[in-house]
Image (cartoon, rainbow, N blue to C red; front, side, top):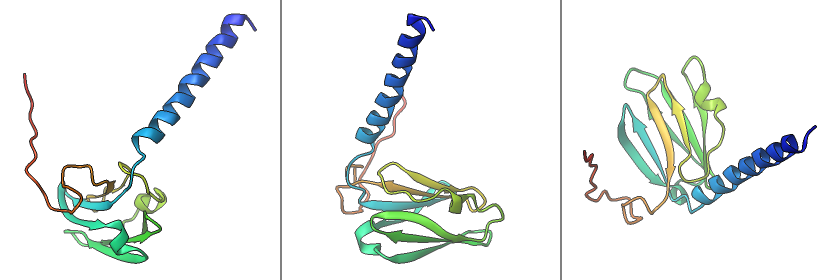
Length: 133
């Protein structure tokens, strides 16, 4: 191998390590809430500490359900009656910004922190979404 090949390999390795470290910095923070959105609308938001060790059942509009379990500040889908079960295989989420998606039931489960514009108490405040040309 030439010296350039070794330097290129080391450079790529440093970039990959940097990406993992950056991801850790971006997603650190206390995960305070879990939000459930169905068909693009938020249907429920709960504080993780209030639901410790409990199951949450979300029924789909067209029939079916997802059984979500909250434990040790993490969330996972324990049971779902969709035919592919991808939401179950997505595993556990515990960091702010992580999500579990169930496409057949149009359900998104996302962990959010208290720095998302709600003041940490779960109440929605006025937020602006603007596109400027």
